[in-house]
Length: 409
Image (cartoon, rainbow, N blue to C red; front, side):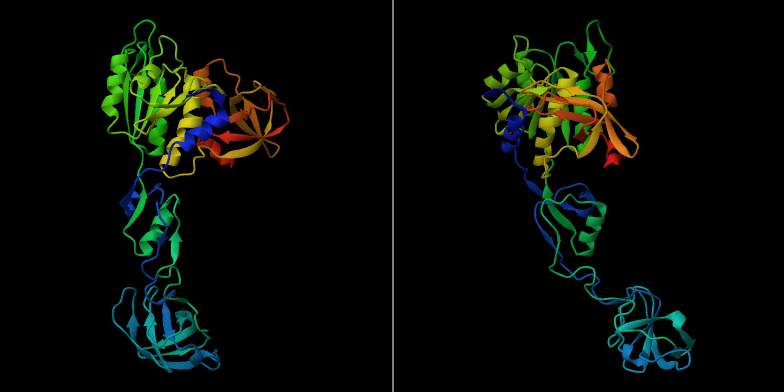
């Protein structure tokens, strides 16, 4: 197992050991946000027949090539058609049929004359405008042609795209399954929210935040709070091992005599990939495979716990979902204050955003409370290993980490 590796190496090692999960067929009403596991082609033409775009009269375009107010063209009305009508009509030169919006076009017709351009009588019209071939017609296959590709593997399905699948004749689609996650928090001092606190105890905010992120992703999860006892931790892991696809443990990751997670997974014969990463916060994070399932040992300190999850575990989960493993969008911003890092480390700095003089500016957080800083964080400034500072006024790329901040895209 590699120790004290760079963040870049940790990121690459993480993604190299995870892959998209198995696939499943789901109905249209369960596809929002899912990732296509295969290319999709249309099964039908849409529309399945040529239809009218307007209320009016289906005509032979050549009949009206010289029609105007002074020289109206008289056409005999054979009948009428409405949207969804199964009746079939055929018109020839000198004939027409009344059609409503969405009605199938009669055989022989190649245009639709809007009703405002004709004078109507019970069995005939006088047309006083032209209607070139194709006017006011939705041609068969005009929206979708059978066998044409309509969605590519890896596409995240939005409501409009799902509507397109329906129009193309699909009732289901093959997508990647969501990974199921086990979140196991450890610590004798940690208490489930809502229960009374004894002296020296604190609530399990790390576990709650991680579960909230998983919920935002729509991922199924289970969570458990376990005492700092090897047997209890081992039992919890073994209990959930058959039913989950990825483990996240919170606390006990450093490796001291009171940090038990690494000893437990070693006893369970995991494949340790790395432990301790040159990143701040988040250094104590560990990662490996247990029964070929990704296993993240996240630190117990809230800033470290959060950053290790966001920068390493979250991209892994996205890849397992079939998505591109980019957790957050990046945008350029002008740095309002100088920020300092550590040589040979990757530092992540909480920040807030403002627009000033039509310029997006980023301000490093200066709050004394780590929890308050995390809660108010809008963006992350990343100071890579080859830099030990960014000076005020520099343009830098930042990560947007909250839905509100996405407005700055």
